[in-house]
Image (tube, rainbow, N blue to C red; front, side, top):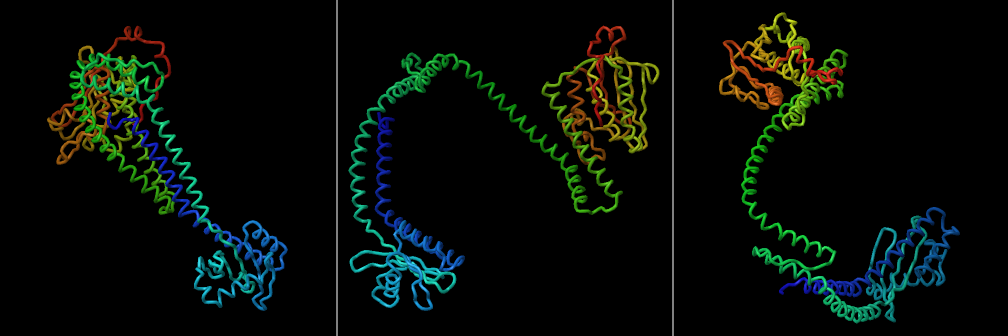
Length: 518
């Protein structure tokens, strides 16, 4: 088998081992001596820093200074001497003495041949580090310079060992040991991988037959490792494939339909997100602007601050109402919120809604008229529905009428019998909705042609909530034009008092839920 796993694993092991040996060989050959020199220079620089700090802090007579010199001499084999630049007198030194170091510096400064053979390793404002070679072939690293007091001379030297022979010996030993280890490892890997690759080859043969729709062969291994699990799964897959192939065509058709629906839903989602973003953009901008005004102190008197806070509160309330309606609409459309039907007095519910929007009506110079086709204005009308959600429907209808009604006109809310149901209509005077737009006013954020003076469908998602609630109840609803305005309506099933008492459940006596706020 070409390019088998067994051969690839063996070659990979050989390549990695050889690369590792080569890397170590290169590091020893070209890096060890440089690293050794770098360490030596670092030791000298560290020694200078310690000595300079002690001289600057405590002076050359410090007892600790002698300990520092001896520590570097014993630990790092650095000969150190401190001299007074005024009279060339040795102040402190290690065992070899300051005279020896002073003579080395003089040789470098005044002997051109020595200076030509030396190389400057590092030079700063305070000291210079050089590398020198002796006549016997040995090498040293010397350092000379001044302490921070500009009087004390620091002289240091440390020998450089010849590592070339050691490096060659280490590389030769590494080559012998690595070669033997590599050969032994290749033999071991080659034979050990057979136990792993044999069941894999069996699975490969089985998969080729399955690719040709031949399901007669099965994996016969009994191991409990990953390969054994894979073989068992392939056996189970072979058992199911024949049955599955016949179902794939039908599944493909369903998939095409799902893809089409997904594309349609994605387009609706994009449009919905764009509309929600547009609705939230204005209140967020207002809140940010007025909040920045308060923060920057643009309004100094209490009246202006109160106005700013009222604007922020009002816009935040609008955003809260929009989010609340979005949550309700999402729950209704997904079926997560089923209607909790109870028997209640529709008249009281309508009166409560009208009372709550009276301030809005006064602000828009509109009059609200309630007409009860069942007798007096307070006549009882018992219906069987979800009271909380029906309150939302009525609120959205009335708010829509107040938003689009002509100033100084009347918004009429009427309740009248329609067979065994009650029909609730909300009328406002104003421009008619184009007939082609009537079916679409229930869509989320639907906008009629902007050329019209009145923007119908501008209730955002309010009418979409109405549609979701009424469809969840299975009750009719709609919108229609009248001679001088628009009527929105819905119907609910009525109940007489005897039926209401029979249908009343124990939980109906519990406190009613909090009514929706506009």
